[in-house]
Length: 191
Image (tube, rainbow, N blue to C red; front, side, top):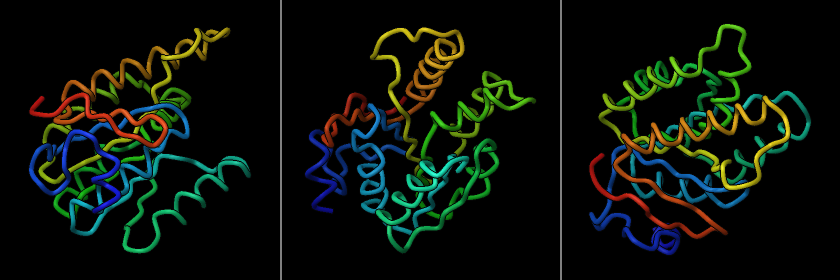
């Protein structure tokens, strides 16, 4: 609780100032988003569910996943789902607060899938999120703050990530930007 309070400069966890049902946490790579979101989930109480979208295709990603597991520690139910977030969210609604980490990897999985239509998948995801009764925190990367990439696929991904973040941000009750491990609440209240 103390770490959550220290990391959130606007809302006071557990004191009712900003207790959104759908919370979008964004920021740059290695900004502290996931650790902040994990702490926030713990502050909500209950049995937290971690919905992982990463796929370990190489040794570096295997290490990243292991680091996340180690940092979280015990007490989490971890579900691995690279693409069908609406199904997992619907199946776990009411089981406790859920943390989706991360939307950016989910988007890349959708974009690279042979049968993927990320725009349609985003519509289905937003409809599912609007129906959730238990809290959901979604972690995403802010990829549009840098230079315009030099290749078409990277530009398509950057644009798509911006669209996804805007769509989820629009329906979120709360949007938090994490920079250098510090959280700034930029939206607090009903969508």
